[in-house]
Length: 262
Image (cartoon, rainbow, N blue to C red; front, side):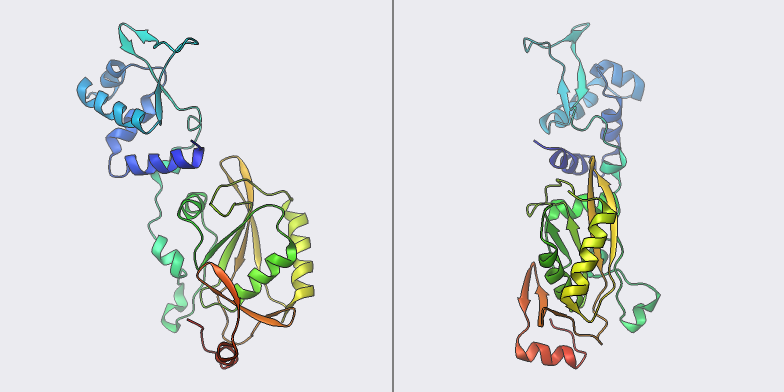
């Protein structure tokens, strides 16, 4: 069981259940009776919430070194799972209200002109993105990925209607493992690679983000401007779903005419 999975479970069980979240907040070597008194709720109701929290391993029954239950006045003592004990509560409670909008490309005041823009996600949004997996908009790259490979991914997103975000320091399965480079070093290496491999020279944005104690780097690529057709080492690439393909002749013709590739 890892922290990402526990946070996901917490979001599920607390969704629409603020009373259950209040129980979770009060768990700190406490009994059901103590929580009942603090919250002004019946003991049976508290026990029901604690059982659900324990089933999902968000809280645990306190035990001694021999594995025996530690009790207080005959009642079990409950503690938070150490993996989530210090996780900010907003990781559980802040849900993405505009996730669908983010995937399609968040629209600004130019919406009427069908001009799409995307923004860097918040920490909570990044957690949800990593949990859900790669998509047309999101690409995960583990630390150590070659800059030339990143340049190819970027060139494909540059020719794509929605653009996208590359998460450097995230495994293919969405596990967050962190970056192996400082932002300044990464920025310089990537821009050198882009300058040497992509034409015309594009503009990208890079941001550092702390997630669950790890630092990852986010590369934001704006949606295609319908003017420039970007080549990487003389080839035109496009992104379809979670894969990058070299554009076919008819697809390149559409791009040069300023038409999106579906």
